[in-house]
Image 1 (tube, rainbow, N blue to C red):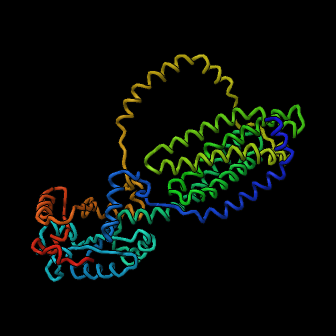
Image 2 (image 1 turned 90 degrees about the horizontal axis):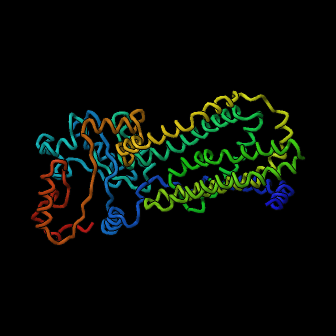
Length: 451
């Protein structure tokens, strides 16, 4: 390894140039990477829901409703006008409301059964069940917002995906800036040079940009990986560069700069590699998850840590040697007090502390079994956001509601009618829509239009 590092230091200018070129290329490539915001795409292939969705898409052209639109303070005729406008919006595949059940828009709302009526029209508020084309969710949601303005509310999985797409992109920038500011503050306090935080930050940014751009090898990545990958890579690989710089400063006291860097690399290899490879293996363990978001995140982060290690051992030596004089000139006194006294006191009570931690394991384990979790995107957007407020308003008026599709073998209309009646008896089911409920049980299947 010593000879390898000798050549790294000798060829440091060429190596730095290669890393700079890679950084520029990856920065240009990153915007071309497709980001997937649909969590359904990451379900295991052999799960019942995935198999059912594939079968349904093969058998039917219509999609599952994925949005709810509520218009406040409208009459029946105004609601029908809004429905017509929604149907004309590009990207809207279908809109369902009360009139779809009886196929007669002239029937007064009060004439509908109360259970059916209150699912779509309540307190002068009209609720439409909308199906949005999955390939045009972002644009279509914007068009619906433009139509309903402040008078309407919009929620659903398609809306969550569209809002997540926009908010994630903008919030990543804010989070990155905040992370960099915190990083600079922490490094300034914990190091002895004003320039050291900048040197560490340059190395981290090079590794992060190269990793982000090289994600193009995966074709597309999830929005979770896109949002959290850079920050996690920064957090787990921060210590590598700091450790190398401090080791260089120690070796610099009795050696020339190049020799000191060679020693620093040699002596710090085992510590940095053991930490980095352990992290890589930990992230690679996510590949074993059946839920594909694990492999998506794990592979990207494992690659990111590996690139961070290469950056520390190949790029950072040249960067440090190019700026070590400025590092020495920008030294400042330590802002942290001496912890020797605290260390001596902790050594005296190590055994009682170990006992406390051992005893805490049992109650903490028992309490961990009582944690509550939520699944899906229902808690992602708080009430302070437009989507959060709209969702709360719709649920307050019409309650929480999900749309489910039940596909049964065709051919036995009598059994279909029996199933329809049994489903309608369930208290948790507000309404059931089928060809039988729309057209009546007496109409034979062969008379139904194929479209």
